[in-house]
Length: 484
Image (cartoon, rainbow, N blue to C red; front, side, top):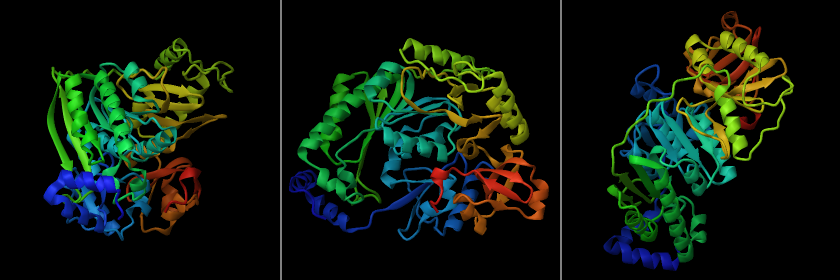
């Protein structure tokens, strides 16, 4: 690899006797790893038992774990886990091994309010969610609109119920969420020196000037993160660069500007020392006692919270003038009587009682004709750009309610009244992910009621279909088809 001359000189001075070992690391293949999603894997059996079964199906041995992350394993380059149905169902996330260190260092506790400030494409957010479980609040933010959509898709694929995806800069969020979060992940945009082996195009984009620009931006982002952190809270700052200007120097600046913080841990990952790319992580703790507020009590789903959200939008100068085609009134975020009946019919006939009640008694909000269930912890979404507001439940159409793909992937098989089971070895599985109908055996047809049905593969939800006699009409999203 032809490295920039100025980069080589800087690294020689920095590494000294280790320079040759570091340089030789570019001749080695990069490391591949996947991290299991324990929101889905391990709910029915022990985590290790289910992981063993899945890895066996993937043909990946379990002899090499990523030691700094939970439930993460290396795999050989000839394996293609990203082309397997298990990937589309969100059973695991493919992630650069060193990048798994940051969320593992933050390790938030259930019930916390957590912010992933620079979140796309979603590796760290989806990892943080496995620590929170279904409690607490995860706000995943990405300033780039297109990348925020990719982030939202990965939040959906992993079945995360308690996440809000926002599309803002750090200044806007700091103004909106002062003193709000218990833990904040800042995976700062950087010069990308640590990714030269993985992304050779990053070499052409590198320059000393870009390093300086990145360092200035990183300081701003960290300052804004501090504004949003509660007393006793934690920020984990990370980059994928070797640059001292973007790592230790940024931390030194931050501590001078914020003397109420201390560094609890700081480390580097080197490609000639660890099985991964270059990475830097630092854990910053604010002095004080961290208090975890109780999760807000669930409301009755009548739209009261949604009405409040609308008023906040109006007060911030943003109006929602979209009219409901069926109610003949402005859609104020609440649910019309007609739509309430359609939702009730769907919940009663399609979902198990506990899941139906979890939706019905949650904080429900309408965006146009789309229904969302907000996280149980109150969060003001007025005046900021939101890509995903909690769990997308579905869409109201003329005289019917259609459940979302997000809801399918957030369920367990046992939470659906009407489900059909396929084996991943069944040729129909690839057909389902490509939009084809599922043909039922007589035994399956006898058990499968007419209407919405959760199609499962090896016990894990894959998506919705609509059963009618001997077949299930496919409702897998068109935009997600033809990936396997």
